[in-house]
Image (tube, rainbow, N blue to C red):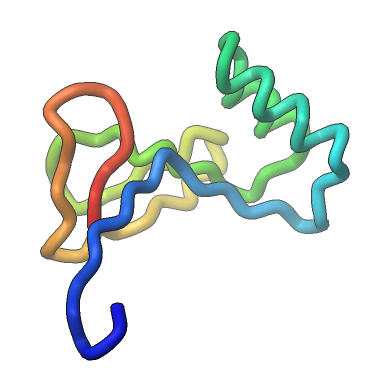
Length: 88
């Protein structure tokens, strides 16, 4: 944040694709996030990785695509007790 202050941000997931997704693909992702099948949709659209940020401890963000591209949490991450986003 401005002036060196820290701000809380919440993340429910992150994915990286080799190309830009179309608006149709994005709409399908949003619909699947609400109804189920989101990860399968992400994989079908060729994500290089997908981090759901649903871990409850540790230092590793798991890759739900099966591609093995894990991420590393920084020391000041705050985990939620139940399913849902992490805060940084």
